[in-house]
Length: 112
Length: 111
Image 1: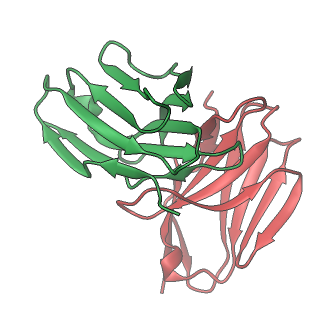
Image 2: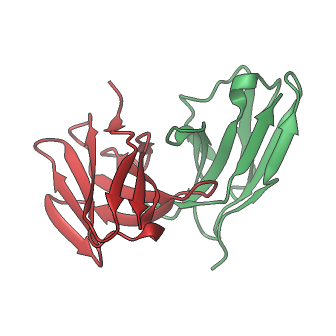
């Protein structure tokens, strides 16, 4: 079974620039999560999709972050414009049920 | 109050010793509890899940859950240098499949 795919693995941008991350979940997993993990902290949920609908985006900074999962499969997370404090690893995860979630390798973002 | 709290450590134990990692959570209705291991620069990987009070053993790992005290722990017996990592506690609230993570405890096993 293929795992959760994410790209790019690394991204370096300057503040106020835009950036987008892509995630392809495990086949058949209806639930998709985007997490932000700042160095030394645990993952923080940004947004949760169930198929192509948003379940929870309460911690997503909506003035600069957006996410979509148009066909209920892969997803993109965008930051526009980026701030220094957005430097983090962005993790995508998927799950089939409420039992467990599987993480991708993550995208490490550095905002200079 | 944070959803999930962990002692950030670092925790150091000698090889062969028992490492004890602790986690408390705020939502009394939480149903599912997980321990993830995260090596530096890598994504979290699930090592244990527990859903009912008591102990659950899997090899060298034992998860312990006490819902009355809102406390979950992970014991690692015969600790190995390869166990050196950050251990994340995650809790899933009742009625949903949202996962809340603690900040993690850094464990170093000294050869």
